[in-house]
Length: 138
Image (tube, rainbow, N blue to C red; front, side, top):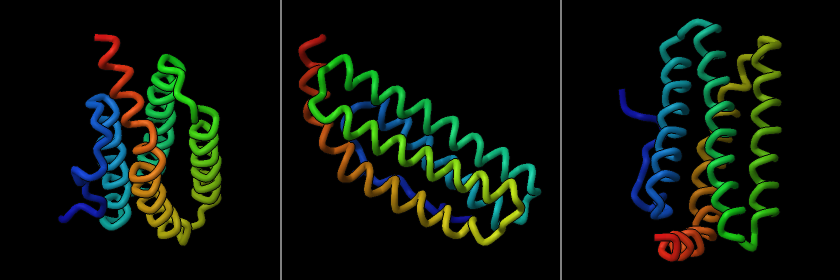
């Protein structure tokens, strides 16, 4: 089955650790979509949704640690974007636990749009700054 959400080199921020984490988020979203399209159990969908939320928070903490260490000027604004994402996903988790099914289409579209836009716009803003910071640290 073709992937729903395909990584493109355009999404790279040039920092291997962050790019790998972004790719893993793509993989988890694809796992969720595949579970849904293959009519996997409610438990499997819930497990994958929780994995996504946990991994996103792990990834955000990685980015945020880079921001703090490098004195990134837009740290507060970027962290706010992360918080909004977590709140939105928690809302989807709530819909899921209440047995709503239609939320899945909204969730898949939200994830694809948010992640692509976030990587291509917000994450690209810090790319040059972090790469310069990392050069100095070597």
